[in-house]
Image (tube, rainbow, N blue to C red; front, side):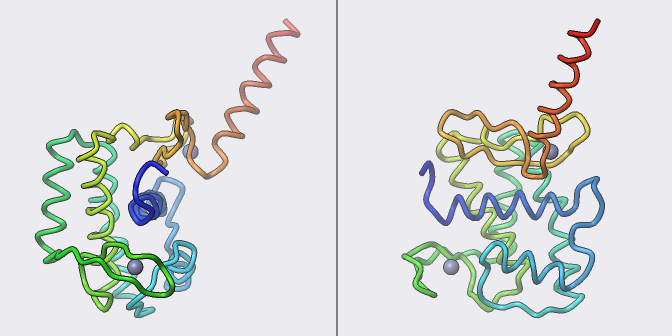
Length: 181
Ligand SMILES: [Zn+2]
Ligand SMILES: [Zn+2]
């Protein structure tokens, strides 16, 4: 493991959240979609199942996406802003049989607030360990998804949406076409 477990989970969830707002169309079209996202990324704590909650989560995405495009100084400004605005106060806690991990806002804080602060805390780890190069954009030319490369040898190039396969098929066809010529 490169980073603490909660950091890695938060980074993966932040990337997934950003990608629900990508050019592939709205990935969080309704409250049910947010419910699914909540379960898929093992969120716990307050969850309202309301349109207002959904809207707040959607509104967070452009700011988080910016983290994948910004330079270090801008990333730091975004991270510090998210922590300050949401009154982050890191505390080690344990719940649901999980080992001690950091929460920086109470579990009954709104979902979008917890998502924002979790992402900011995880990004703070990346900044401190000089690992911002782990934040990548998918290499597929038609994909603008973001990803976090948590592989040991920094080899990850494609997002989770099947772009690795798509690229392999394209390369295979290109080789075959070249061989026929
Ligand atoms: Zn927790
Ligand atoms: Zn992709």
